[in-house]
Image (cartoon, rainbow, N blue to C red; front, side, top):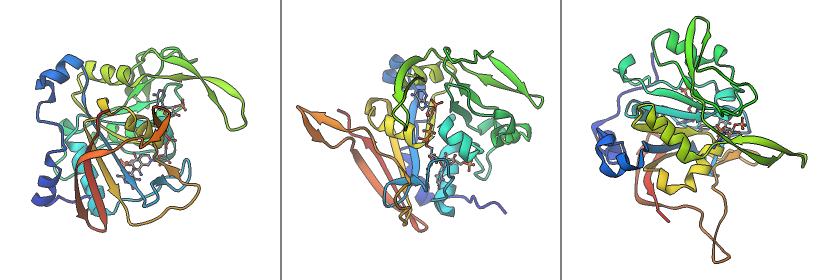
Length: 277
Ligand SMILES: NC(=O)C1=CN([C@@H]2O[C@H](COP(=O)(O)OP(=O)(O)OC[C@H]3O[C@@H](n4cnc5c(N)ncnc54)[C@H](OP(=O)(O)O)[C@@H]3O)[C@@H](O)[C@H]2O)C=CC1
Ligand SMILES: Nc1nc(O)c(N)c(N[C@@H]2O[C@H](COP(=O)(O)O)[C@@H](O)[C@H]2O)n1
């Protein structure tokens, strides 16, 4: 039996005002900006961690909040994760909410500038083959060393590469060495997604992507965080936006307003909107 069950009408009512409007493209402001409705959503421990260690899939959500996640997936046109999540978690990225037909499934989108993810072995592709989800779109950087064609075939199934012109920036590795990495601007990523016909995107992680977007409040419409009653402990992967300074002084990096809390099983769910700068 599926562990995903229907939400109560009170749960749905609680979430309603944080969901994308029925036709977000109708919002004049958004149409002008050419951007989709963006929801950030993830599950956190009480010490602000989203996994026990880098690359370790960690279950934080209980059955009720897992059901909520699948309800939210059904109410967005796309689900997006980074390659740092796609590789270790091998997520399904479909909605298993009762009544989710193929037509209603969200489009999986993976940010993988350097084409590190092995899509051929992925659960996403298997689910697409079983018509329980769509074939993924992979956003690569055009300047990636492996220059990709637009579509590739794996196990008889086509999946789509959606190259986007990246910028190269220098990053430091753990041993102090520096190396060039492909980096994509979030306005470019979101405009790219919108141009492909997506009006709403649920961004699930991981830590790098969520932390980056918490510092870009003008691109985010809703934030929905599951807080699980547990501490993961030192060495976990934390969601934490970059430091912020005003007139040289440290200030809070991000804040939610219009907040609402509700208990789902043992977990708490916090919804809000990022305070605009
Ligand atoms: N509890 C929860 O709700 C969730 C937990 N997780 C956990 O999070 C962890 C993964 O987090 P993390 O390692 O930070 O991985 P992410 O999924 O955030 O992916 C990070 C990678 O994505 C690419 N990327 C991200 N942003 C950009 C950009 N703007 N331009 C270009 N490339 C970009 C880079 O790839 P490259 O390295 O090739 O440059 C980067 O290293 C896992 O342990 C996972 O289990 C994930 C989702 C939800
Ligand atoms: N909401 C939520 N709670 C957790 O406890 C999690 N670990 C995650 N992780 C995210 O969900 C993806 C797994 O998706 P599937 O169920 O396999 O479709 C995982 O990759 C993270 O993005 N989320």
